[in-house]
Image (cartoon, rainbow, N blue to C red; front, side, top):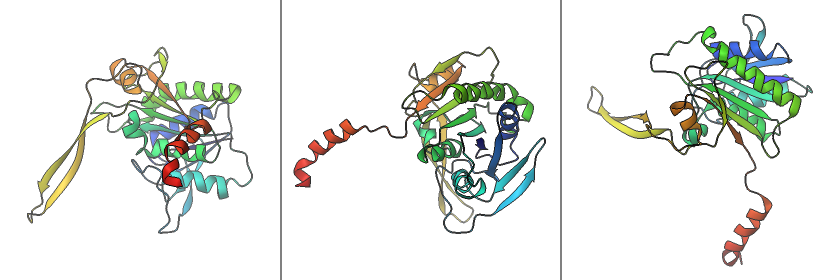
Length: 260
């Protein structure tokens, strides 16, 4: 069974298109936030109860969680799905790219997939880059990306993940076609040239607005270069346990004097 979630909310056209596509050849359970939870990272709700409700979408039933994407995965694994084996966590399709490490560690979409990986469940995060005017995408505008997502998920279900890979971060360009090339990439460091805008409210109090402009130049071979410069599909393999035993031994040697 495949657990489908996201951070745009259970009613997002991206998750509807995704669930519809992969349910053609897989058993799917949709558990997603009740409302938008963008940039929530791996936040987990501890300060209030997490409530659930049933939702009827176009062709299937879903469960809405009054919490974060990480909550959705944890509640599904430990309570909602009981003893059912979850073969994969699939998150998305996010409305907006999740490119570079800068986005990777803040994205709710990616963090939902990462939550599954932490619990030993293989996962994929899907995101679609949008243009500035694409604030209200429809399900139809996700159809081609969902077609690609179904191909990727079906391939992984049949062949498994590459050795040492716990999850994939997949990003689609603005104009994704069935003929769009696919590249295996690494994450860029930053996607935005960040800056902080200082303003004053009507009472004269200072406040700050966090903003950023996308980088114009990107290093070849990165997700940023592939999606924004070449307008191709980026697949970035991620390993949760990236520090191997021999690396730990080397670090122990470095700190040996301190640890005596």
